[in-house]
Image (cartoon, protein in one colour):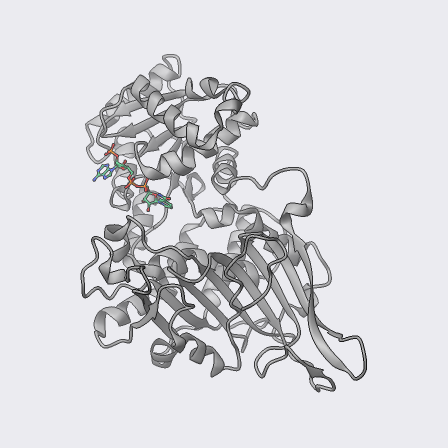
Length: 494
Ligand SMILES: NC(=O)c1ccc[n+]([C@@H]2O[C@H](COP(=O)([O-])OP(=O)(O)OC[C@H]3O[C@@H](n4cnc5c(N)ncnc54)[C@H](OP(=O)(O)O)[C@@H]3O)[C@@H](O)[C@H]2O)c1
């Protein structure tokens, strides 16, 4: 495995722990080597020392011997080169031959963990150096493109150097057990699918928010924003898992075909949608917390969105007329990723329902992806005593209760899938383009219209009030979970 950008943040925080998890559980091949690449002037020993220090953060010292950390580290190597320049690739070729015992092995996995500006350069150099043989695979980090045009250009570069079956566009959201569990819930059970359509579902919410700001990533974030960072990839994938048709068989092509069909069925955004069904926000100072424009490396007049909420329509037989409301934001009251499916109200209300508001029915299914992963079904029951007051109660399942095996890391799962040649949970070129095709008009609209609204929201709140208004207009309201989501029974709402 060759990691480009091996001296960086992703490698130390995610890739090394994931590889170590695979190693400790004997899920890597007996014979393997990992070559880290970067401009930083490490040699093998210095790189091993650096990684060794990082591992101390995720493996307790008492477990070191038990888990054979030294055994893992002995598989690591380093090559100092600038991946942007062609001349280093002959060195890489020699190093690979050396590690393969003198011969040429093209059972190689490249992992691109560099800044995105190098995503289009490295495959070209690999091809020129003849390092793109039929057994090689390449994992590319997000973001894959900046808009539709750049995503298309990037796809063209990759397809000129590799076949689609060799290209693994990673999005760690799909590596999460709980994302995959949406499919199991829908397609391994007979009771949900008959209700999973426009006849019984009123609307769907998809929320992925966090209670942190942009931390030290100002330079990166200001050129990106929430739409590119979260919506175009993560949120839309969750929409696809919720809305897709059951694949005829569960393999990579059938699954990914159904994902693309959802993207292609997204109702194109009209002028009215762009004006009224997209709410863009930016966090403002509150208490001792800085506003976005006060963060380091952020221009004082920045119009980059740290929050976005929007309404999507899916124009197909199953979903016509059912709005999907999606939102993501930074500096929200809590960190949570969940999908809430709202079932329609009973046609006639005989009982007084305390929790049944003008908007929502008694019945909701909450699929929580993080934290305290699990599923909750809400329904009405009679309050004991006289009269017929009905109260909303819930049945919940916590993923932790499934027993035994800890929930594995998303990166470990995805790297292992790639080693085994299974691209199911990676994004195919047509899906990237279909997604960008849908979202690109929003970026264009914001670019062309300086006066397109950008609402402020104080740190620690649930975003601009306009996003509530957007939903109320359609007879819907956001489900805002508790701030403190540490216990498994905390599926309450504010
Ligand atoms: N960090 C995360 O949690 C995370 C999560 C999801 C996706 N990603 C994506 O993964 C990629 C890597 O993320 P990261 O946070 O690890 O990035 P990073 O720390 O900024 O960069 C990774 C490495 O790339 C090398 N590099 C930087 N600029 C370069 C240049 N101009 N030319 C050649 N090499 C350069 C640097 O190594 P040398 O100086 O040694 O060359 C650096 O250590 C990014 O594209 C990011 O969007 C990151």
